[in-house]
Image (cartoon, rainbow, N blue to C red):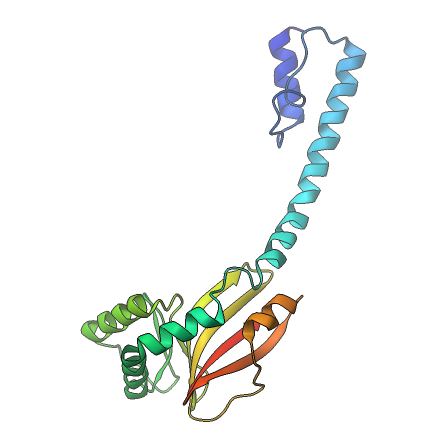
Length: 207
């Protein structure tokens, strides 16, 4: 068997190989028996790498939960410094009371509504999202509570969200620090809230 044939054989045997020095490369002078053993090692390595992929994804997802969210202080300062615009966004959502979920490129209304928001109205929502750094739009939890989603993290296996909440009814449970909850959270975290001022709160949840 010539050198190129040996190289092709090992490349086929190690399809997930990223190391061109050890696996995926056949030395020039391999006997048949050594080449056979080498091929077997490559195949077992490829199977091992495949088995590691789902474990890697799970670890990556769990590692992302709670990581990357802005701190309580950052969100509170933004809310206070842009209070007029935040209040305007809430006023618009009160006027569009049938809107349940709203993002940059989608609008979901309740079951009793089939209307479309005017393009100018959508453009104003999008402007406010950009100005206020609302990353994932809004969600109306009920008649009293609206979430402005400031940050979301994670993957399909595990995710988390940190948001502003405007609620005419005090939500529960209230905590002193969402940052502390995030630091100590190792899995699913039911919704928790932190009061900012008036009807404004911060919100965190992971699932």
